Length: 429
Image (cartoon, rainbow, N blue to C red; front, side, top):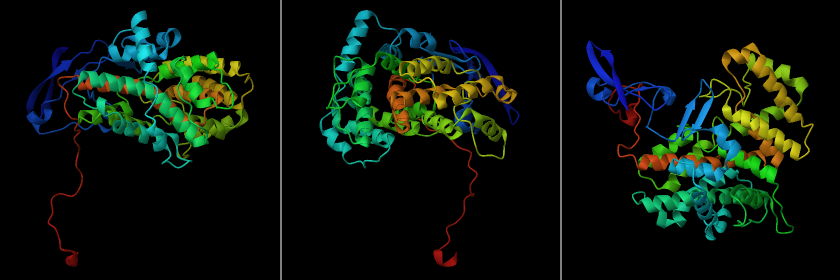
């Protein structure tokens, strides 16, 4: 809603700009007409002070460490719900009734198989291809297999495409994993729940029966909930920007997956685990803390601090508990990585350097340890992130498509290159 106005003085001219208020969180100054009225743009590298859209999906208060999906605290959803319930909430705006939940689960489950020709598509990749490279290619290829759900102007096709992506992402991720380790693909099993089905597709082999561990399934389901959406982050902004051009939903999600692959975004949990492995033992921690504090040393402590959270990441609190549950279930009591992680956490919460710079442990700090304990290689961590974030991307894409004020994304720039000059023939240069 629009509140009072703000005033901006530019070259002696006073401009009135509306202040728009959200339901919670900071207000924004509407600068949509700034260029037409002044001939100037704003300059905001990284868009850290720019609201690119209006959304009703996710709210973050980084100073207070708050994350809400459709108004519900992430802690409550992770503690009491399951991932598909969270998917329904993000897509439709409300928690489902029992009958709505049963219907939604049924529809997702019946969409988990992928077109059989996609198995041959995977064979075009090298055996040592990174799973995320395979994911980007296979998600984009879905638009070549499912022509009947690429018309974004048709609400029914948008719904079908949404269901297909939520349902098929675990299958594609499991296929990417199986392909890289040289094992046969495992088909989904409709009698299993969403996360248990994914674990089976990853770790079952035809030679023996696979039994899903409910503790691990619940832990992974919780990880999916924690990663389901995170407001206008880099990959979500990528999905919205791609979608603003009218691109089909599969192409948009492939674009978001490619963006997520970056080590500063979805690859952060992989980087955090590699850092813990590099440190090795608790005795080595002081040396690495000193390196982190040294401005002239390139070493960085991964898994600490966050672009948005200036307080303890609320997801990290849940992940800490989940990590211990998994390690206890698997009988891992003296894990060196966990010992290093716990000591690093203690230091980060008590050392004045970390406190002043607000370098609190984030979700990546714990999720890498948990996924490794479950048996996933580090190369699969970002693929699992993409699997979980797909529903957030789809909800954001769907909201953007249905917004009557939606326009193609077109950021502007501050040009600092050469001014206009005349072409010089090559012989005179």
